[in-house]
Length: 167
Image (cartoon, rainbow, N blue to C red; front, top):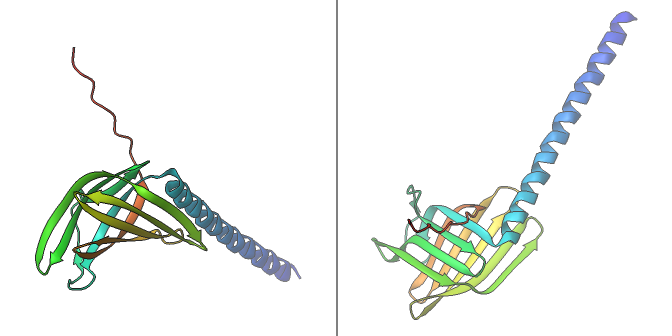
C-alpha cells in the first residue's frame, strides 16, 4: 500500500513537472511573438541577411559580413546590401531614402511588410515576410534591374545619436 502511494505521488509530481515545462515553453512562444509584433509595429528595425539570391539567375550565397543590413526608422530606409543583378558580379547598394506606401499586415503568425523607396531615379519595392514563430525573415527587393531575395532576421532598431560639437 505504501509503495502504491509513493508511485502515485511520483507520477503526479512527474505530470506537474511536465505540465509546468509545457506552460513555460508556451509562455516563451507567446512572449517571442509579442516581441516580434512590437518590433514590426515600431517601424524601427534592422534586417540582417544571412543569404542572398538573384531570383532569376543567381545561386544562393551566404552572407557573413555583419555590416550589411537594411534599416527602417519611421519614414526613412537605409540600405547597405549586396546585389547580384549580373551573374557572378556582386556589388553593394548603399543608400538612404524615404519610405513610401508602408503597410504591415499580420496573417496568422506571419507579418507581411511592403514599402517602396527611390534609388536615384529608380523606384524599388521592398517586401518583408516575417514569422513570429521562428523569426525567419525573407526580404525581396524588386527593382528595374531584377529581383533579389534575402533570408535573415529582424531586430529592434537603434536610435542614432547625433555627435555633439566640441567647444
